[in-house]
Image 1 (cartoon, one colour):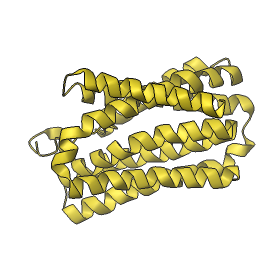
Image 2 (cartoon, one colour):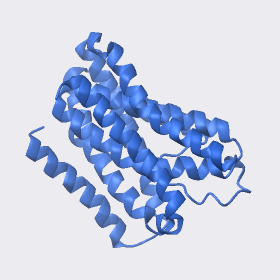
Image 3 (cartoon, rainbow, N blue to C red):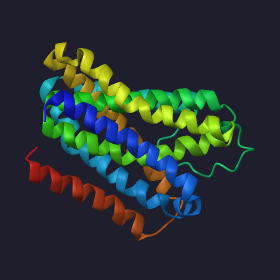
Length: 246
């Protein structure tokens, strides 16, 4: 499987994960409301494991300025969510329509669309470094795309017509492979140091999504199960890393 095909394939799987999250809201809304925190905990464990075990160390090997760009990636997603009112976690209490944060459907769509573009780009960067790293990076993106699908449709359907919300949510899903295709057009021409900086920003974004979005959502329901699912995500990522030798 060539790198180009792998990037397109796994970014498409990520987009389909977003669509699966949308479908879950359409078909099993109550079940999603009840169990979403477990999905978020597991996804957070995967993302934090990928960031600390792979993205940060790899980026530091490629560029001495990597830590600065880790911080920049973290800040980028903070600003994106603060300004555009979007969240990567499963913010599905969307029936609270009085919340002023849920009144700007198109602004939210823009933020979520851009977020998915970046996810696709991250997959491209991972495969540019190493196919095995690309596989793990794809796993991290795919794991949080499902709750993002839930988030996207949940937020949009509370502010605009249902059919329009569905169309825009699908557009957000398509943005992930679109971002990967964008990466394919020029990432091969970048220097090793520049790829390392992009990898550092990807790690910063994973850190933000895991620690600032997904984990706080899990606190909506207390208990050891949430912690167990987070640790399961970390252990699964560690086991996969040892298995494929990254």
